[in-house]
Length: 82
Image 1 (spheres, rainbow, N blue to C red):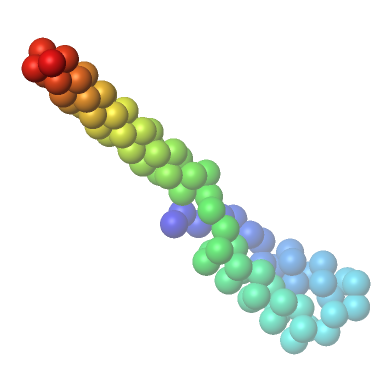
Image 2: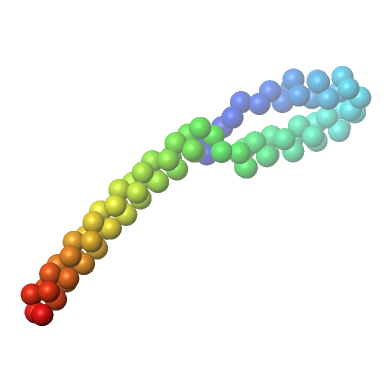
């Protein structure tokens, strides 16, 4: 996963400005940083998934075409037999 820019120093400074202690501000910033790094998808992550889905769509389209061609061949053979 790609990294996302998050200014931890600025975040600690802002939290302290609204009444957090230094320790609370640092701990809260650590939690937010972990969430960003471990839980959020980046644009690169989404683009990789988009590419994978396009590849899967192409494979499924080809497979569906093969199934349809086989079905037509089976129906044609059955019609010929009857």
